[in-house]
Image (tube, rainbow, N blue to C red; front, side):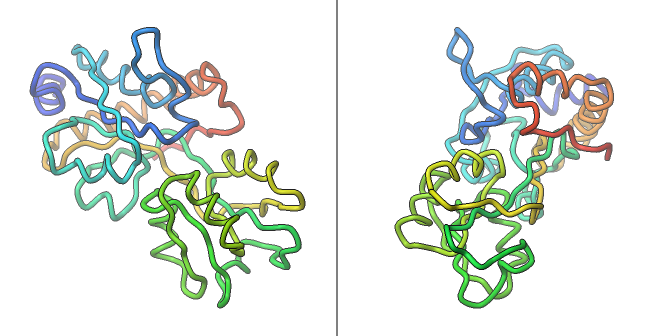
Length: 242
């Protein structure tokens, strides 16, 4: 199985790992050689080590761009949030870490709970094509989603257009709320972004290898050790067993 997985996941002899550079919890810096560093790149390095091949990182500015490239021959594995829309073109493992997504509200907002956000007249700023935007687009029935480009763009849109809510990952919102006197973050979550490893469709041996690998490194404590190593304890959570 390992030989077949190696053939499918590293057909060029090198594991080309697509990395979403916009997730500041999973990519926290760079190595002395200039490669991305963090939990996500370290997971890719561990996959390459298990396969017995070198790794080459293919950076993407956004998760949407990484997902789009699934139909091209530019990456062999892609580390992004698993979502049903993306799963049409990518074979995902179960999550290895989770990140809560919730809302930031402006000063004076009457909204008191997450279930009160989806109401007529509520406008929600959100980073387009993020994993949590895909969830909101499938589930929001009454509020209006106002799309913006990237995390900074969604914050700027929220402030400049005086919107009723800003959707985002809780660790990022904890930083953003400090910029807005009187603003607050709602308790709970509307979803949890499931950070996973994806392979190209129809590479069954490779996908099975990745699924087993992720479950093993969660159970062994390896993922927890990466969270501690990169200083994101309390912001990332090891995902439960599949």
